[in-house]
Image: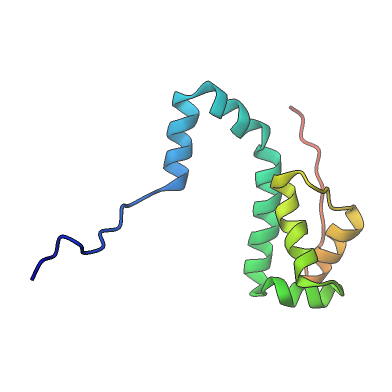
Length: 107
């Protein structure tokens, strides 16, 4: 039996690769750090939805919007195509049984 065509996945660790690129490539590091707040905000939304055990469709239904609209909210934080309003973020938090909290941290 010829195993030369057998699928052999290549391990990939995105966090390790990002760390490597940040250390090796100043332009990548600058771009990464410029996006840090957006990545953190998106991560907070996605983690809260995961903790609640809800799909986008379920959250959208609770918010009274279409699933595609909710997908745009979640993706907008990193695409910069739209900044969700505080009202939208509050509705998102309410749909997850959470409270929205915004903090200003001294630089």
